[in-house]
Length: 629
Image (cartoon, rainbow, N blue to C red; front, side, top):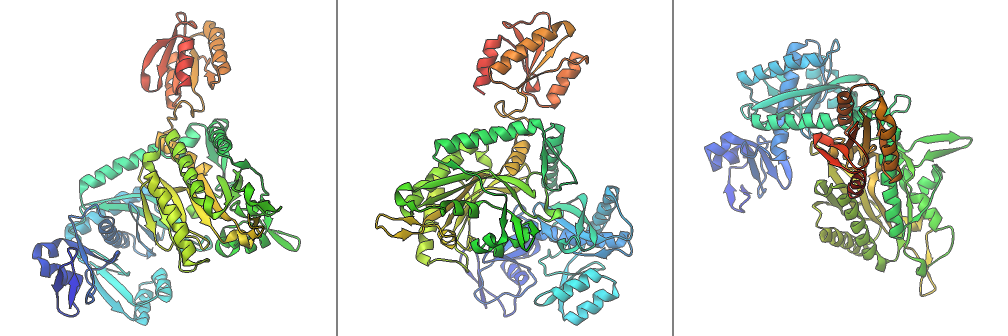
């Protein structure tokens, strides 16, 4: 048999040869450093046999930053974690332990609860395993034998996994620990140079809140200790910038268990919210969007008619009422289509651009909630553009221009990237229609010069889409906006217009959200700025600190003049020391502090900027400076 190497050369091997055999045939050093085989975009364990003509790439310890190479390293480390826990906690039951972005986790049912203080001892046991050395051996057994094996060990979660597994049952063994696993794994533990357990969490078995809650241990691993140190530094930065921490600390919002997944916005948080809303309305007005408002609840028959019931049923909050059932809307598009269809339209009216930043609800699992970035209640800057085929390109180009304006306004363009999702197998419409709509989106995104990847086959059933992502401080992507081109749903909901030929036609519909969820966008901004918002967005732009009681009246007058000029100002006239009040302003990340004492006047103000820079300015100079920021 022959396999094809990355340089297109062929390597001849005996029939039944594995990836490990291929590495050895190329050279002993490669065989020693090999960690994984990649073939046609998929990963494969080095122990598995190759096929004649298969294209292969062998990843080694030199590929230490390759996501697939890190994946196999972390998968094997997760198994070391499970072995260590079993050694330290007899009677523990072991569930699942996959690699994830930036690390891995493993779920356990402990005989007695453990706390964060247990992680140090578990980590030390993993280090002992690494010092002893481990190799991974793979074998396949039949289903009945696998069940007997895990039943004898009392591993009921593994027995359930065997019952529901598809395909061959494979086991991996290292040391005295055997796990049910499809792989892939390292050949041995030598490449694992740095391990850190990072935290504990509760997790329901198989993500179902009706099942038993397990203890999830998170960790990460690297081929190089320097990479772990850099990651831990980023992790600390992420903790400091976490919007779930900074939001309450800066008095922006908080969450309450009486309404999980829905934020309670404080006055200072509403300043940021309203600035976004003002920007949205201003840009919508300038770009020809028409503000509308549609109901919060709809009879579920609407969702069935639109097609959303088949795709989003599990995410719709349902409210039985009499003999019918209503659903809290998870999106605005059906309502906007009903608006369009409420009267006969002419082609001369198109394009029609409806916009609505309505409250939406989606029934997210409890374990998936993540502050503002994954919530059950959120507002989306939705818009739906009804247009002719000839108008599509101009409309989408205008949306990209709108997006660029927003990203540049917030200084986040460098964090943004996109994903173009193309036709799925089960699609509505012809290939010719999809060729056209995909081409329009591809042309638009190429013109914007925004980094993007193509997600083949992941478009909506009604058309292709572009999803926009922004990375947080750990480099994790969060989806924000989207542009979707829909040639199918308008027909389902009776949207037509009278063309120049005096015949009825179905319009194209462009679904568009650029902030996406306002909650999520604000969460990303909090972390991006570390709570240090630019002056125009800061909830409090200036704080005036009178030195003593005799200065309160004059300080209040300065504050009032700044308010009249359109700025958000507070006066801190408490009896605490000036130093303490200045430090608190720093902690609250207020951009400007005016310290007002005997020497200060409208012509000479003592200004302290965030991080301590000091200057003297007149009130007029300060107003001019603030107006430019």
